Length: 260
Image (cartoon, rainbow, N blue to C red):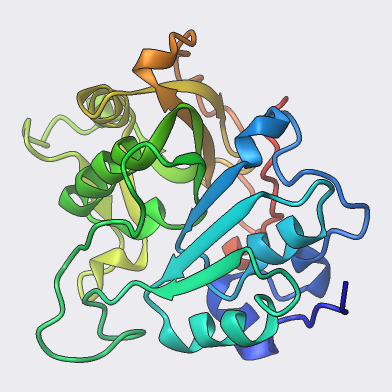
């Protein structure tokens, strides 16, 4: 295999971690170590950015049978097409042409759009640092898309910011999200724990593994599977991680393994 380039610094800064090691997988280990090998038959990477996970999956042994990454950032998609697909032809990258002025400007774009995949066709769907930037209505829509494309034996790996709405009695029944930026709500979206479990069930999904953040209030690692798979759902544990005011979210480690 030809040597894989690392995305340029400006792209790494946009997606979060800048350390090239966060994009590398020299040992060839599965990116999600505790998933069965069959899960990598057909991968769909929602919000693939500049190919952090794609690059690691190209290096893993065995390599996924097929991979489709898509993102609303056209420049990053073009970089992946030019630098990753030549090394792994089964890795495809598409532009998700939805409304987002900062990264995908243009008039008349839809707020959301269907996944570029057929029903039940994907054994692994990944959304890393995506649902943390979706307003509630868009999160619900894309959960339905995950359920649509996920195979009966498939898994959905994702990250979320979560809070407990019971601690906010002023919130009404239809309000399930907190936002930190009144100019751009998608800067970070924190969704209610109970809402997430209910929304998953409404869309035929069950939460089957959950790791709370290592820093209080940061990313939860959530695994879902189709309800039809019959896997035992889990309750979300309490976030009892230490509070560390010195930690920058951009410097937080990338930890996809849900086995612990």
